[in-house]
Length: 131
Image (cartoon, rainbow, N blue to C red; front, side):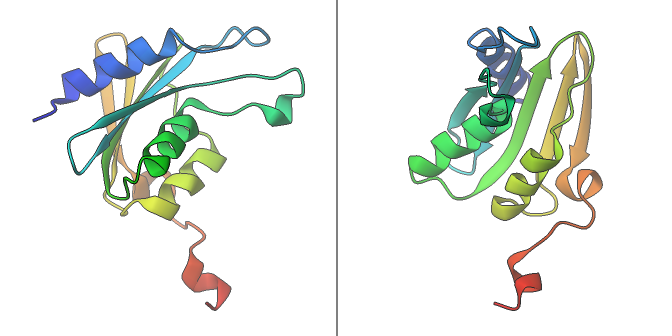
């Protein structure tokens, strides 16, 4: 069983692999799947800022490419303060996760836990496109 502490530790370690020469803001994410696997991600910046990608999305995309489709929680660690996921990452999470998906934000030893629904109460969903 993967504990919150193990997931948080993996997120902190992932931040060490960040490529952040422009902002200096290193973020790591650790995504827990229903199969008990952890996929890590780190932010990867680019001189063309729009080509940069967040840690959360790198973790999700790696897991999806590996065939994982059911997710339980993600831990996010970055900087000296809590690092909530950006709007794009929240929307990506809503594409693949249930409203009760757990998002753990880490700052030192202080941990805050949120549901995806709390962070994105009105997610844009496929049903809204009339499909």
